[in-house]
Length: 125
Image 1 (tube, one colour):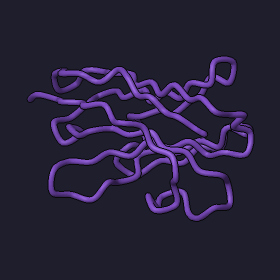
Image 2: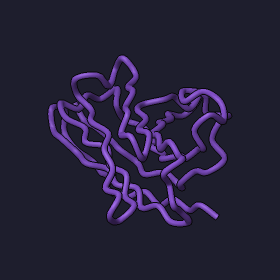
Image 3: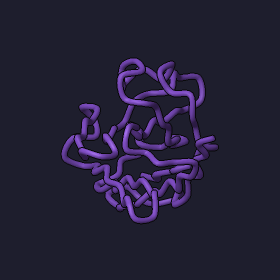
């Protein structure tokens, strides 16, 4: 059973950087895609970025391009999201999720059977 545990959230100021981590267990993950989503109250959970574990193919939401970088460390099964130039509108709970490649679209949250508990990111202006 895949388990995901996020960490690294916190309160930062506009323009600051933050790195989120997601410790994964229950692998191996060579056939998985790992993804970051985020959600604010009253809104749908939205796609942020995805990485295919073995090939390290990445994809980003438009708002994340140029500011966020998704990566993974296969030696310790950890997923990362480096967030730079943070804005108040980036305030959200950030979740990592996992799916087997081919099981639905990467941006569709319904494609993901495995989720972490989320970590809060708050960006003050």
